[in-house]
Length: 139
View 1: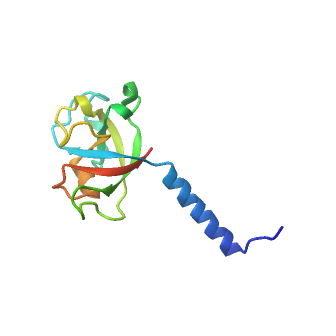
View 2: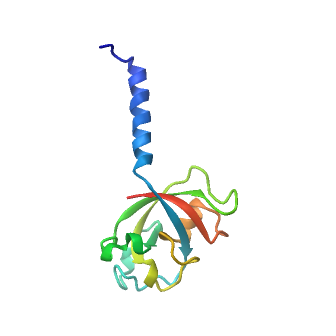
View 3: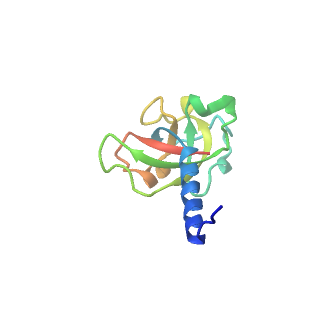
């Protein structure tokens, strides 16, 4: 059996890792929401639930899982939108789930999305004028 040149095997490892990384991600939609955020379905009125980065969000019914989604971390990136140029290329963020979209105090910019991102999280990956975007997300 022949052996691969070290640089070839490194390239293979990198490509395999990238393929696996992308194959584990899910695709959905994300809306945005702004204050007020309290109380949340996850942690009530506890203001310490929000990360200092203000990158947080709520999940739609498909991810809610009877509250098990609370505290989960998701990597999220914008992949497309109705208006070309809405996504900020190469931007990926990590958000903390603090609420259930269906019962959030301030309503999302669009009902029925997979995720609802805080305004700061949304603006980190897309133009703020969009009401929703298509996203790739991974826990």
